[in-house]
Image: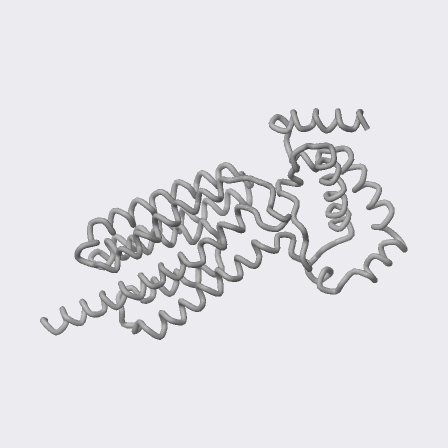
Length: 299
């Protein structure tokens, strides 16, 4: 027992220097996985595993090897806790208690609720704003991207949305050039991560940089127009809330009750923010429609 404790302490001290995650470098974990795979993941044992595996697990792609890693993860976590050490990460992630086939159930549920909130607000936007509104196509495209695309795409499209609102209605050519630039940036970003190397540090830095551009641009426009257009205060609140809530993504702690971590809390916290931002988009689109109709009558 003393030798095992000493090994855990040495691993804990070397965590910052070595590659990978502390938990999956632990010999106890590796030995457990190796024995589990030898015992359960070949021949008749594998057929037995597949026969008793729930259909939803097999459809979700959970393999015998995945199940061994999951079970051995908890064996290792139990050992760490028993000997008074901090909970380690495994393969770059904290240990989560699996529900059905969801490895991170709270994050999955929060993502679903975010998508549902976006869908409900999109339906309200459809019913409240005529398609003739100048910002209608851009706002609708933004709503669909919020549901189905990655964080980088959402941020870039938010920057594009800001460009259309602040510059593009008067200078369409500028928007066309800026759209081409953003598409080029997105293509280069995704190609590098997919084909060259998935660099978490680079991805984080890129998202932070474009996020700062998004925040500063929207906030500057809101501050300049808040007295003339009272509804832009909703946008100001959204920008400030998202900036504050994004700090949750920088926190790193083991999940509460093995379910709720900083990422899940961030997802849950952004649900009302989406609702408020769609409310701003609706008010602003109706304002622009009224303004364009007034100019048309004057002409």
